Amino acid sequence: MADQIRVLLVDDHPVVREGLRALLRNEGDLDVVGEADSCSSALPEVLRAHPDVVILDIKLADGDGIEVCRQIKEADACIRVILLSAFWDDALLLRAVQAGADGYLLKQAERLDLQQSIRTAAQGESILDPALVGAMVARFRGGAAQQEQPLTEREVRLLQLVAEGLTNREIGERLYLSPYTVKEYLSALMTKLGAKKRAEAVNLAARRGLF
Picture 1 (spheres, one colour):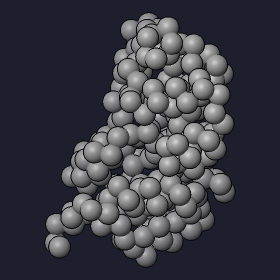
Picture 2 (cartoon, rainbow, N blue to C red):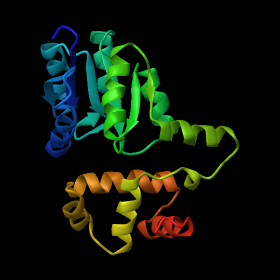
Picture 3 (cartoon, rainbow, N blue to C red):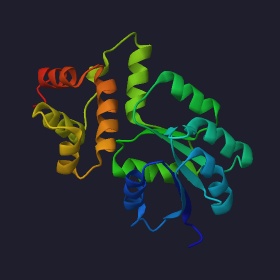
């Protein structure tokens, strides 16, 4: 189709790439044209596949996804790059913008958020995860607590399973996720709540009456 958006996936975990492919598989206007699993293989694959949009993990096993974003933009400024991160960080976000990223999304973004973000990026617009916007607004307002951010149903379910004493592997079996993905989700969730430990995150959620 002439109006298809060509998408390339860059992540060093096969399970994550498969999950992304599954999200995009039935979208008639989104076509996954390539994959890479490292910083070293990303740019050659981009040059081979000529995607419209690159979905790029911010942390790769052999280096920095933000630097890969910079390389892609230097090679072809018309290619849109959406960075995926397990957590939000002001410094990372600033570096991403400076590298020319067109979007910055948290990995737990809902399915339609990712699909629509790809379409939005392909149209030349910038994307910022709503959770990041809320956190940044809170910062500018002088320290509204991060735990005031609303949690998604999946985040609440994760905390419920943590409260039951399940390991990351056991949680993954319940939710059909890899232990690594569970770890990434929980890391992002604890950052969102302002908690340093899993037990603290559970206590904060319980105080809010989430379970």
